[in-house]
Each structure stands twice: as C-alpha cells, then as structure tokens.
Image: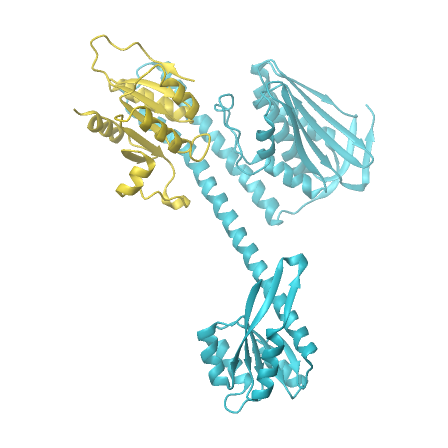
Length: 140
Length: 382
C-alpha cells in the first residue's frame, strides 16, 4: 500500500523520500518528521509495494528496513533499486546488530557494497542523524 | 566408509601385529545409525611411545595393554587424565582381575579385554567401542543443534522485543518536543499507538514465560476434573472487549458441561489463544464459532473464524515459534508470534495435536485434539 502525500510543488526543490518498513509506527514517525523537515514522503510496507510504487514515482533517497516480510527483503529490494535507479542513495535501517548473531560488517566498504546501501543506521534511529544523512546524500 | 584410527599398545611385537592384522581386515556396519567403519591400526611398543602417538596421531580408540615394561597401562591412563585426553580406551591385560578392571575404569577406561583373547573377542570389543563412539558423537551433535536452536530463538526474541521498544521510543522522542505535535488528534493517536505497542510487548513476555514454564517442566501441573465449557465461556468473555466494537459475533457450540482431567491454566492458554486469534484475524462483523465435543475419549476443540484465511504455505509454518504471517492484511495486527506454538506444545502434553484448515479470504478453523486421562471424562448434553 502506498500513500501519496501531496502533489509535488510546481517550483519545489522538495526532495522525495521513499520510506519502506513493515512497522507502521516506524513509517508514521519517519513520515511525520520528514514532512515537518520539508520533504515529500512516499511510503511502502514491503518489497512488493515498494517496487510497484516505482512505476509512478522517482524518489531522491530511499530509506529501507532490512528485515521485513522475509529476513532478506531489504537486501533484495536494495538490489532492485540499484538496478532501477542507479544514482539514488539508499539508507538501510535495521534493528539487527551483531549481538543478535547477524553481522554484516557494515563498518567496512565490503559490507556496505554487499548490502547495496550508502549508509546503514541501527534502530532506534535518531531522526537528526537520518536528516543529516539525507542532506549529505542529496547535496549537489 | 569412515576409517577409525586405533592405537594398539603392546610390548610384544607378535601380539601387536596380530591385533593390527585383525583390525585391518575388519569392518563394521550399523545400518540403523548410518555408520560404516573400517580401522587403521597404529602401533606403539611402550606407554611412553603411546602418549606421544596420542598427541601426534589423535586416534579414535586406544587398545592399551596394562603390563608394559616402563610405564604401566594404568600410568598411561593417569597421564591421559591429567592432560584431559579422553580417547576411548579399551584396557587389555593378562590379569583379568576385578580389581584392575575397577581401577582402570575409575581412571577413565571405557572397556576391558582379558588376555588371552580370540580375534572374535577383539572384534566384539572394538564393535562395542565403535558403537559408543558413534552414540557419543550423535549426542554431541544433538547438543550442538539444541544450542543453535536456542541461540536463534533468543536472537529472534531480542528482535521482537526491540521493535515495539523502538516504536515507543520514537513516539516519545516526537512527543517530548511540545512544538512538534500541535494538533490534539495526532498527539492522542501517537500516545495510543505507544500504549498498544507496550501492550504487545507485555503479551510477548507473558507468552514467553508460559512457554518457558511448559518447556522446563517446572510448572506444577494439576490434572483435576475441569469443566472445559466453563473455560471456553471465560475465554469468550475476555475476547468480548475486542469483538464488540468490531461487531464480531462469538457463538459456543458445546454440551452443557464437558469435564476432563486437565490442568486448568493450560486449558485457559489454549482457549484464550484460539478465541482471541479468531477475533483478531477476523473481518469486521464476522463470526466466530467455538465448538467443543467429546467422542470416544477424545476432546475436540475447534474454533472457526470468518477471517482472512491462510495459504497452504502459511498454514504449514503457523505453529512454529515466532511465525507471524506478515502480509498487507495482518500488518497492523499485533501478536507475540508464540501463541500457537504454545497451544501445540500443550496439546502434545495430552497426547493430542493442534492443526488448522483454511480457505484464503473465507476463514480458518483451528482444531485442538486432546486425549486426557479417561477416568474423569464426562459430558452432559445441553
């Protein structure tokens, strides 16, 4: 399910952020704060709906959860996005950390390129940090 | 075929070679344990040499003569114990006295072979040792698997607990800044969502405790004559606050009483899980039918809903721990992911089972079959 927030402003330099997460509360919080910060937001609750959304929108940044309907849904989606929109920055968000037995070596370049993400944030994320990363990744 | 290394320790060359020859030509098959074994003998003429080879060759089985020129067989056993070497040892000795056998066993020998012995007796001892080795290996593998399953369970559990915690933290972070949420409606909605997520977390912890108690076997089970109809009615009652606002009707189809020898708390868990699921995963204005029957000493509990249903693939995964079917229709429904696995465990404690039949988009029927102690079973028609 995708919800379009508002039609793009005619003169807007407003960036469009795609937020994909199966936790409706995380989606709501992220949307609320990004919109307050002046971004346009499109949301999806899983891999399938995110892929479908790309038929009609062209986001500037994608914020993806790693584990959604399947353990690796975020990975598969990030690969899809890289192919479809090669230049679009991807921010991966996850509650998974090394202490749960899954370690993707996110600290090094290898791990990041393997996950197809430009930035990886661990939940709970600080919104200021998310905003900073979006600003950095969309800076011309 | 797997080759097992056998270290043969005897100071008599002829004896050593005879044992080695027998072993070289010997194979064992354990058809029911998937094991085919041949043997590779390694020889040592003294206890000192044996200790060297134990380290260098890492044999699977040690055939150790007791009477050796320098160190005795028992001295070798002592050294091995000090070094923490647990190689499976068969003690060989001409002095087939009970006393030596007891000392050797105390010092860690697994078995005993009395000289003089025939090749057949040697083979019998080796067969016995090999079987022991195989069983010990299987036990180790099972223990390892169990550790893995446990670790996975805890990993998923941690993830399931962190998700609501993160959501609540997120809402509090937004709400603590008075300028962030100006309209009362959004404010109230965020507080409600935070409370709902905390409620889900509490349910997970309660389910987890139920599961742990059942699995540990530490919970005192009280198998007393209990009226299941009464338990069913109580479960329906406690589901009403969720069913009413959504206009979901719950009907009970049961004899006026159905008394069985069961643990009341366990039955409450079964009924509460089944009825609350049937409400949670139902459509608005849907129906729930709770059916209870006794036939030939078998109690059948069937809870039918008119909900979203399941695909066969979803149904097959449903009773496993932390299986919550995630799709568009269930994403706003909170569940611990443990309820049905607990129901299945309880059913198995009554020599019964839990199952589901379902038609996608039409509804599901969850059936629990129990075979409680027959003595106190009775049903009175309504």
